[in-house]
Every structure is written in C-alpha cells, then in structure tokens.
Length: 65
Image 1: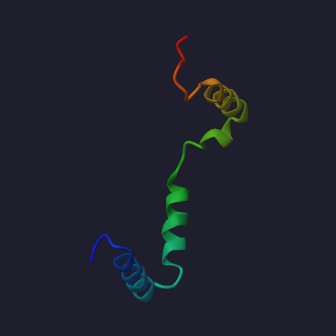
Image 2: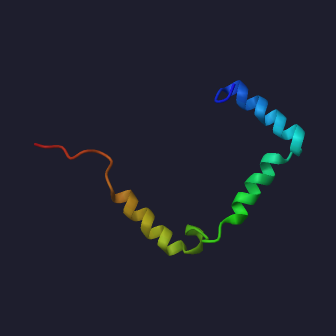
Image 3: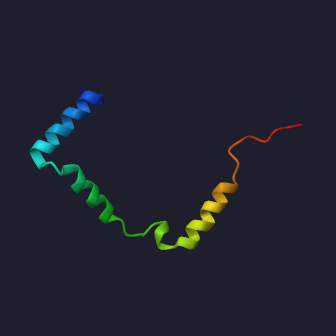
C-alpha cells in the first residue's frame, strides 16, 4: 500500500512502535542540526534586501494595450 494515505499511517505506526513515539521529532531535530550555513537568519540585512527584490517581481504577465 505504498503511496496511499492509509499506507502512510501504517508506516508511521510501525516506525513509532519500532523506534519510539518521538521518532519523527528525533529525525527532524537531526536534520535541523546538520545545517551549517545559517540561512537568512545569519544575515538579516541580506534577507531584507532579497525579500524586497522578490516582492518587486510581478507574477502577472505584462498587459498589452
């Protein structure tokens, strides 16, 4: 039943039974700790500039007269 909603629930139940109730919390925490670049939080000014640039880009097509 791979790839179905019920299959996912069954897999989650199995993982929690085998590896403990905090299985998903632990693998999520491990992923967060693996990062070493710091992301935008490291440089708030750069994040502000990038957000402003992105905000100026229109998602709508140019209308012709």
